[in-house]
Length: 233
Image 1: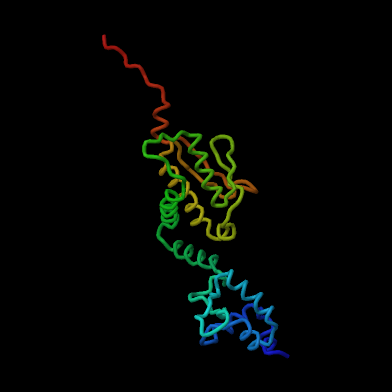
Image 2: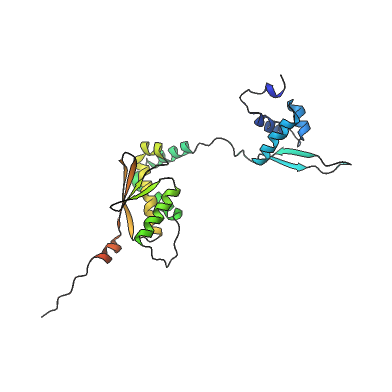
């Protein structure tokens, strides 16, 4: 059994190469690594190329010390390994759980969503007048980018065919759904839309949530027919 085989059988050989570089006080060449690990130099070279591509290992030429070509050596890239496992789902549960303890968790979540909605939506120029169709299109584009698979429906509604936070929504719907509604409200406010997101119905249909849109008060007032003033006799 070679020295490389003595490592934990579940440890990929590429990690063994990286561990050897980290354990060395000096940068190592391919031949040195192969001798330390008891594997073929071509195998070491293959894994080093991959580690360099991943940004985990730095490759450089040593300063010349005599005749001949400078030696190529390798050293672990300084910094934390960015290829490890992530736990964003756990982080989201922690934050949602904390948010749920607020006296009015739904309002707090909606306010947070509003702030981010204004940041995430595609901006418009200060002088731009956003129409209803354009506002719906911009809102739909933002929700598409976020993974909600929106589908405009009849009667001023939007179906959300996919929830990118489905498992969390099933557990924290009273907090997460107001946050999603806040995202849409913040986006529509940011682009000065003539419509507002008035309500979000979670799981209103077997395969969709429903977003209800309606004209803003200003838009509704503009559409209301003006009454003629009667002349005084």
